[in-house]
Length: 386
Image (cartoon, rainbow, N blue to C red; front, side, top):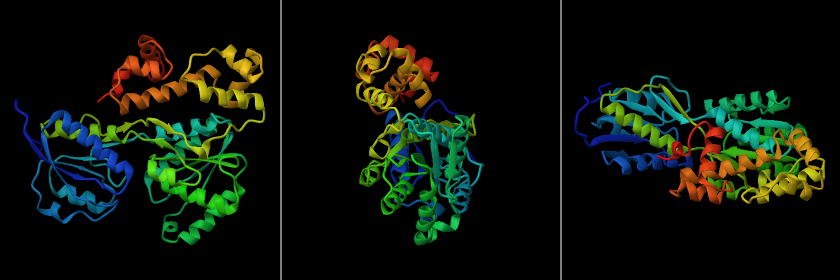
């Protein structure tokens, strides 16, 4: 590779973006690159419409530029960008090669967000439905199963095979067989939203009730696809824009002569977009279910645990003990977690002040919000701002 020499003046570099435009995640990555460019105004980019896993575009053979951000999904793409002999930053978790510095979503964080979301609904039996074609799907599944195992719970993993994708009738029968024998109720994580749509379709054909029998959560949060599912699909929200931003920043430093200090940067997810597919409280005690629903409806408002106990019809001590046993966290910890989820999303998606975000999410004073945010996440709110 031939990075540019460091210089006192910033050049307008020519950068190729080999990122598909055919799915929501990749488009969000592109928006993150766009955000970085707007803030720095130092690049001209070449981007053509393409789909995931497409052959390298013909124009790349003759392209003369300074750097590439690519979704390295195939060996052909890896070879094509390697031949350009310029700095390359990969934004795919396909695992095709480790030769390029990579910025991707945090697989463990995605699995944890999905698992905790399901556990907070009182579920104690879990399943994972992946797609064997994708290394990141296998990674999500390992992290998900390991986490629920640490909770003393079981996880049944769908026996995905690479060849299944070529024959939907065969895979549909496999999904039917797997879903039929899952315990009830069960929380199921699927590797991405399209797989979630497939699982929901099979559940409907089998007469399985979602979310009462199976609560299903995807990841990528392709909002249009999730809303078109029946019922609408809950999904983990990856911070794809931050992936794009960090990849752009890494490539720019490299083109200025500063090679990447890290080989792999993993970006944690923003949280979960909750929709009907996980809208349940799976506990036998109606008083605890009432408390959980009360928290979901009122967590942005100031209220005390004593007030929650009265709403549930339990003493405070009994509520706190039984709530932790059922949901894995105390009532007040649940409130803080929901407030934190909203705050993280607003910090990334808006330019509202910290004080306004603190007020809107129920934290109240900005100083208390900042202290709580740092204590719960290990970083200040400003860390989520580009």
